[in-house]
Image 1: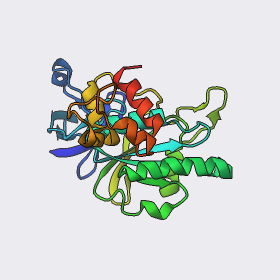
Image 2: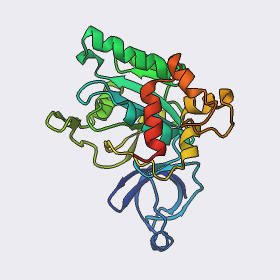
Image 3: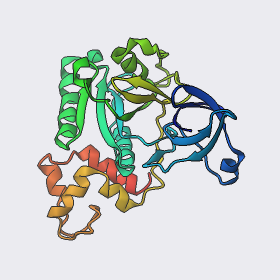
Length: 276
């Protein structure tokens, strides 16, 4: 029988086919150093409650541990915790590298004063001009048809408001939320496992919050090619293999002067390729 893993808690995998089946993974997966992931299409024995085979994946993420993702909605807080271009750019780069469509959602704009909001809107415009869908949690209607026939992962740092946003979109989910720890400047972890939920004709995952994303698996050239503005700058550089560091005829410095590339974005890029 074939189905999709929609939940994992410890060594129990919930597979959905005609109904939900709680299964274990065959020992052969462990011997082959394979691990079934939420999102996997699998063959399973509904009587023995055993997962027998994992179908080929189109992609997979390590953290959160999920596969076959179509799009990632990056929930980005603007205050408590404060907005971080470094974290957003890390997430965008990792998501682009995995051939997943990124969508950015800014949250907690109601906590900003007029000047702070004007500043954040400049960032929102910048990322929108890069071609990303940029949303806020203030307009529920903008999410209409966003999830249909897709697997969407909600991700972002702890306390950004992922569970709160999901509850706004569908209150029946009743996902747990927690207060922000102001001493640490981040939220308490409220999501303990990865699980797919039905939402607006698709499947979505609220994943454990995190603030440290690993870019060490990416080569510097892969970082460059998965940061949209750095990749597009190559067309105006003297050398097609320009890494935008100190090369002669690099167009990036001029683009920064003309506000076509954010200085912070470039600084993040340099830190990523230098692994700082």
